[in-house]
Image (tube, rainbow, N blue to C red):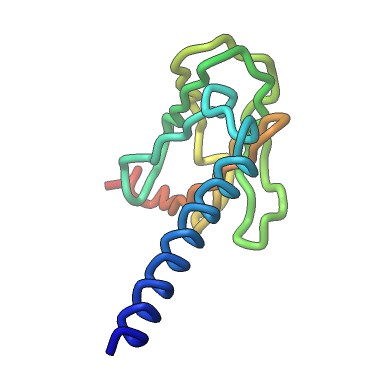
Length: 129
């Protein structure tokens, strides 16, 4: 009975030690790797389906060169919306969706350290209604 109790205590201590070592390893591996302030945040388009003039909104916490484009579902470039340096803060890009055919696309925000995609459905037949 005593031997069984000692084995259980031993196993519990080994599990606790493994968890502590795992957390220390994760903390060491992640140290300095991710600086959230260096990324831009891309908001979703609220009109579904989107049509006519579309507002694409994003926020950067620091000055960034941003490439913003629409790409196909196969991630092939369709049209570049803008490629320029933006100051820190919130930005709204206006895009005339009648320049492209109706369908599903991704809009992509790309900087030197990130690439973010969001899906969009464009249906300009809504303009006639």
